[in-house]
Image (cartoon, rainbow, N blue to C red; front, side, top):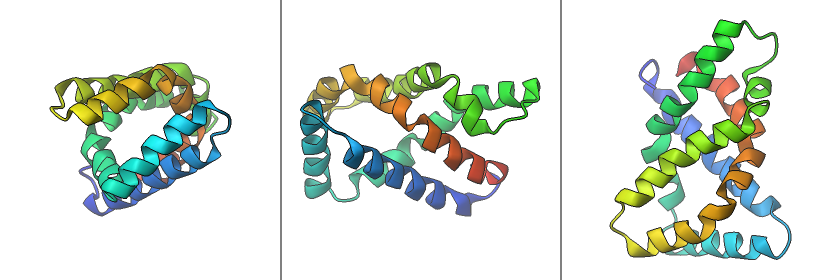
Length: 144
């Protein structure tokens, strides 16, 4: 994110919007746990999601850098979004490795408990978000 530090707040804001949209779009009984946890976090600490995204962003970018390098090397005719979508499972696992590591090093037992409760469905939720994440990266990549 060193090329243009003014881009970082825009990327963070777009990622927070993506998370909000993903949470709102969840349906069914299993979505109740996710929506409740997210609502609770937003009620108790309104900027926590934004701060968390900002805190994790460099590690996420590092994980995604590998895909971007392969994307460039392969000379793909499609967008980065399409490239990432074709590898959504692997992308999700890479991003979750970042959050898994952060959860392990957290001293906040409430955060750890909530994370561990939500983690089993984490890959599924992140995979669904990969197309929109790809759009965000396509939009800002030249400035990152």
